[in-house]
Amino acid sequence: MTTAIEFIVNKAQLRDCKFAPLLIPNQADLAEGHVVMKIHKFAFTSNNVTYAAFGTPMKYWNFFPTEEGWGNIPVWGFGEVTHSKVDGIEAGERFYGYFPMASHVCVTPVRVSETGFVDGAEHRQPMHGLYNQYVRTTTDPGYTAESEDAQVLLRPLFITSFMIDDFLHDNDFFGASTVLISSASSKTSYGLAFMLSLRADKRYQVIGLTSAGNRGFVESLGVYDDVISYDQIGTLAQDRAVVYVDMAGNGQLRSSLHHHYNDNMKYSCAVGGTHWDELSGAGNLPGARPTLFFAPAQIKKRSIDWGPGGVQTRLATAWHQFMQPVMSSQAPEKAWMHITHGVGEAAVRQVYLDMLDGGSAPNEGHVLTLS
Image (cartoon, rainbow, N blue to C red; front, side, top):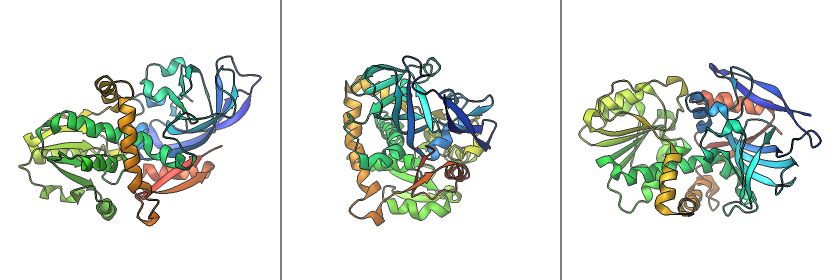
């Protein structure tokens, strides 16, 4: 066995975190049907804070079990095979997928194909299959070595943005003329605003809600029709029918908006929990009852509506459009996101605590490694 390392957090107190040894089999100890991957890089965003905040009810803790009372936050990243006892998977191959915050991981590949495999570990089967897929980089049409950082940071977030946009359009925006998006500086939020801005049949106003400190950044993106700070909510016109996309998970904010609009709140969905420490129940709020948006459910619906490859084709087109302003290779100073790299235990811990406390700049993207 080889001693690796993992980063885990106290489920009951998220600021309580530590590094723990992780035993990983070497080639001689590896069981048939298993593969070991070294995790080369992973992203850490507000989306991962959401995973931690909803770790128990949404079963995020179940993907990579660890010590009793502690959890390993799932992250999106790239891993390279170091040992394999699975036909069709060789040492040195690189895969994109869902990983633990660790230096290594052992998986149980099934349904191996030229495009990748699914982790067939028994404990992962109750969760949605989307999270158990690992994509082989050599056959992924969207992969380039140069775009790895952007992919780990934005691909999973943008899928959510893309599907919320599609869901709202699919439901004719529930008759609303205004879309409110909280945590407007977050990557999932401005990905959604970007998609909404592209619609030729746009008949609605998109308003970004953000902190006073992030307002300038959000306005500079140019994808919101209006941007207001949280302390200005009382100035919003109450006679307009609205849908609210709650990326913040801030119960007080949700309540304020529902009471401000009353029956004009036509749809209210909770997507994330970037304000993780202010989560609260929906209660008996006026207007539409808040519901949880789950992207895989809309993906499943559209997979039927659009047929084989339909979701992937549309998503790929939108992804390439989105990458233009995000990375802005022609004018890097205008890029929406600037990537920073962190290596080692101290860097991982610091980024985690900063994100937990909302201390990361909105135009930063953190790519980390423990290997």
